[in-house]
Every structure is written in C-alpha cells, then in structure tokens.
Image 1 (tube, helix red, strand yellow):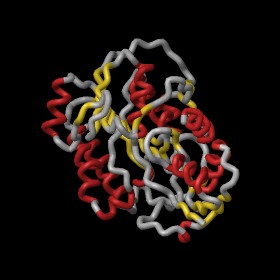
Image 2 (cartoon, helix red, strand yellow):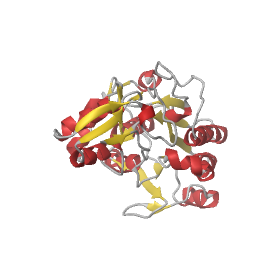
Image 3 (tube, rainbow, N blue to C red):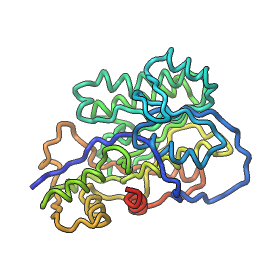
Image 4 (cartoon, rainbow, N blue to C red):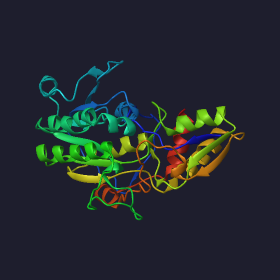
Length: 319
C-alpha cells in the first residue's frame, strides 16, 4: 500500500498554443497599449504557461526571468533591489507579473527566513519599481477550516510558514504599490514541472494500491487557465486593482482528483483507496477546505471559467 497526501505544488510556467480556456461574456473592440512586461519565475509551471500564451499576445514585449538561466530566460534575483531596479530601467518595463514563489510547504517550516525573503521581501522590491504589478498568491492565507468558498474580504488566518510568508508578501506589495493586482489561487498543476497530476500518473503506473486523502476539499487549477486569467487582467480596457480569487470551477477531494487523473490516463490496475488526513504523516498541516469564491473576478472581467475536469482533460491531452 502506498499512501499519498497532498504535495507542494510549484508555480511554474508555459502554456498551450491551442488554448480555449475562459470565454469572455463581452468582446468589445479595444486598442490596447503595447507594453514591456517582466515575468518572474519563468521556469515554473505558471511561468511556462505564460511563455506559451504570450505568443498569442505578441503586441507586447516580454522579459522572462528566473534565478536559473534557461533558453529565452534572463537571470534575475527578485530579492535584489538594485538588480531589479536596473533591469526595470534598462528594459523600460511597464508591468511586472510575479509568478515566482517559495512553495515547498514542509521546507518552509524549517526555513521560514528563506521563504520570507522570496515570498514577502521580494514583493516590497517589486512593488517599489513604480510600475504596475500582478502577483500570484495562495489559498494558504486562510485557515482552511471554512465550509463555504472564501471571499477576498474574509479574514485571513494562515497556519503555516508558507501561508504566513505569502500573506506578508501581499501586505508588503500593497503598501509599496496600492494599485497592484493580487490573484489568489489553489491546487495548481500543469504539464510542466513536478505536480500532483504527474505524481499520481507515475504512482498509478508503479503501484497496485494507493491511499489518497478524501477529507481535504479544493479546486484543481490548470496553470494554463490561470495564465489566461492573468492576460485577462492585462488586456482589460481598465486597470482593476485589488485582490481577486481565481481557480477553475467545481470542487473535489484529492481522492476524487486522483480517480479522474487515472481514468483519463487509462490507468486501470491501481486500486485507489480513500484515507483520512490523520492516516497520512504530514509534517505540516494542510487546509481541509481550500475552495475560493471567484465571483468578484468573473463579475469584474466579464468571464466564465472552465470546470476543473475540463482543465484536466486539456492538460493531459498535452502531456
């Protein structure tokens, strides 16, 4: 028996050229300003999706950065204010999209100082550049004890080092750049990087049995859909500053999610058993309820959002 809990999911980057995703309710004809856009965390799940989708928004110029150089990616330490300021000035940046984060929930408990530097201190640096900023945050700013979808105005109560540092980053960003946009998301996955979907496919092919928690509820979110949401913010005719929640639609447990992954992957010889969180040896507690209310985003930007099963199908078609 192999028992699975939830895994830390990285914000990474890249997206599909055939990406239908979210369908606008209204389609006004608008001439958008050409911008120079800095996108951090370009080697991650979300960053890769942003790189792919940027091809559909070619009127802008993009500068993809990460701490490790790769093809088409500049090296930039977002915690280094002098380096960031020089980069922004040299390339005449108009907008920063921050996809970078320290997302290892368990390691953050042992090294909160490093998590704080990347998830919080860096936001003060990015927010001080006197340009527009879009930042990706997390459901971990909430306690995880809720029973109805969390709204942007609900009280935060992070219970982990990861959640605390992400919330501190939100506060520092808004203090430095009050007109920033913050997108909180949850349960992110894609065909890029390491994530729950890839892990469940691998284990389903290797193991005869898996135990997966069924008492943690949330919404799996395809990183390509989150990238689409970011471009929705960028291309809106009016800049709508503030905090928004964005995930795919629908809810499920990690157990339900695993069954859907195995069905789409054609895995039939692995028995998946539902287990309680207490049966899995978590070093750091996971939220029992991670569902976010997306009403504000849908109303503000006039969009509909795909169900998580739709996102999963599209992701696995690309894997």
